[in-house]
Length: 231
Image (cartoon, rainbow, N blue to C red; front, side, top):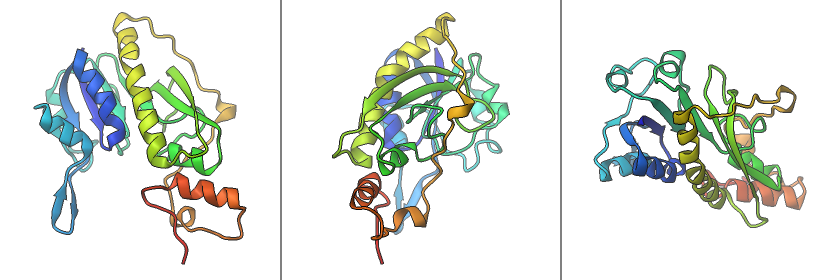
């Protein structure tokens, strides 16, 4: 398959690596470079793309600045923590549509911080859902789910790594089923939806009136970035 991969943080690297082993990755779409104290920082996905001589596209707004994307013929778009909302024009472009590797057991924790929220809330389990993308956030039909335990000592960083590896173990089977037309689509249960909104300053600040276990979960759910603080 010819695939466009869209992702930004380290979470997507093992997933991209598995795809790149067996399919033709025609384009990498990732967020623009970050400037920190006059130093230019590339995303982990861009670092991988440079190392493997893959074409790179870094639009500030992928829904407005997307001429380059449409120059590449693609059978499928795969996203993994890309960081921008993707509009209908792109969703409808590939032959087989767009799929997303999401770090929760949907319909629980739709949104941008599912891994952090699962730890902060003291959940015992989480997982990966690979789903078709549609116009709403993380609301498409599900293709495959896998579940793992959240250990008592897990942090945001350790759980990111575990889920990233889990997603990489799932992705090729999903692409194979899409290619062969054997995907079984499962609609999300609308009564079970919860949201994992992006973190706010209120989420980061420690409130010592909370229970010790809640504070512990908050600290490990925010470790190492952005971290939990008190003033």
